[in-house]
Image (cartoon, rainbow, N blue to C red; front, side, top):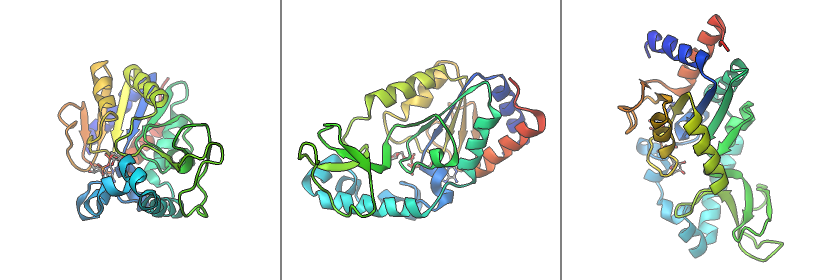
Length: 253
Ligand code: APR
C-alpha cells in the first residue's frame, strides 16, 4: 500500500461530505470468521449453500439450515470485532460533519458492536429470527433455540432474519443502500469478492454517480480495474493507517 495513495485518499476524504464503507466477509476474517470463497477455508468450499443457506433448503429440511446457521451464530458470538471494525468505527469519529454510512453484506453485527451508528445490513443479521410469513413476529435468536419452531403469532415457520439464497433482499434496506451509494463522494469497498448480486451493484452505481471508489482487498477482484484506488492490503492494516494519517493532519471539514 503506497503511502502516496493513503495521502491522496485522506485528501479526498477531507473534502467529502458523504462517505460509504461497503464491507464483505473479508473484513471479519481477522476475527476468525471464515470467508465464503477463500481457498480451503472458504465456507462454500466445504458445504453446499443450497443445502445449508437457501430458502429451498430451509423449506425442504428446516433443521439442516437451522443447525448450520446456529453453529455459525455460535462462532460469531464467541468472536468479536477486530482492528478493522474498530478503525472503521474510529473513522466515524474522525468524520464529524460528514455522513458515514456502513453498508454491509455481513450478518455478524460486528460494525454495530464496534460502535458505528449508521449500519445497513443488506443481507440481514444472524442475531435475530423472524416469521417466514412476515406476520410481524421477530425475536433475538437465543442460543437455547436449538431447532426451528413455529411462529407464536400465526403458526408459520420461524427462520433466521437473514437473506437466504433464492430470496430477495429487504427492499427498504437495499433502497437506502442504493441512495447512499449514489450520493457518495467517497466509497470504500472492503473484504468482498463482488460475487453476489444485487449488493455487488452498489460500488458500480457509486462510481457511475461520480464517487471516488477505493477497494481494500489483499487480492484483485472484478472491481479492481474500475476502482480509483485498488489497495492490496488487509482491512485492519489499511483502515488503521488511514485513521492514523487523519489524526496526524486532521480530517478536515
Ligand atoms: N481484508 C480485506 N479483504 C480480505 C481479507 C482481509 N483481511 N481477507 C480476505 N479478504 C477478501 C478476499 O480476498 C475476498 O475477495 O475478502 C473477500 C471475501 O470474499 P467472499 O468470501 O466471497 O465474501 P463476500 O464477498 O462477503 O460474499 C458476498 O456471498 O455467500 C454470500 O451472503 C454471502 O454476504 C455474502 C456474499
